Length: 116
Length: 112
Image 1 (cartoon, chains in turn blue, cyan):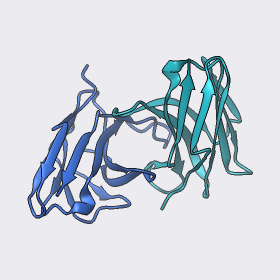
Image 2 (tube, helix red, strand yellow):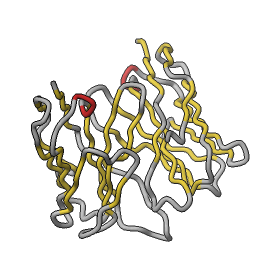
Image 3 (tube, chains in turn red, green):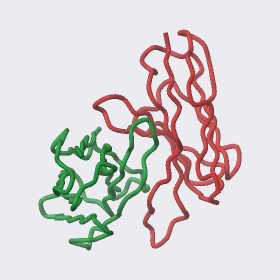
């Protein structure tokens, strides 16, 4: 199993450009997440998807859109990139619910994005 | 909003010593989790402690949870250079649909 994979690993964009970050998991997990990590800020949730066909906003959704293409794939799109979106982006997934509690999350290796 | 606050922000110790990291949070939780992040990598789950548990062990890791004080600690015993990493606590608050909230992390450096 590859676990959680993310592409690309690195990306440089100019202000106003758009791009899509791809994420896929092969663990048959229901829930998937997108986070951004900035120095001194920990991880902040951008969007999440509890199951195929559903998405919901997290703490910092502005400037982003997501698509849960199928159970395996969850993409994050920046329609018009801004320097404030320079960050490291992580995708994660977690197993199906049990006893109304979520279990641990499994993370991808991250995408390092710079917006100039 | 940040739920978890970690202390210390950075910790430097010698190999063989114990490392203790603390996490405080604000609201009631279902569980609390600890993750490790090596430089330039994704986070890796270490251990989960449920709200009705007070202590949990996994290898050289010991986690405690005090829900009355809304705090947790992670103890790494007999540390090794390979333990050098950032450690994050993450809380699963009630009524948040399982969305984890991460602390800012403790950067641990273990010197050989």
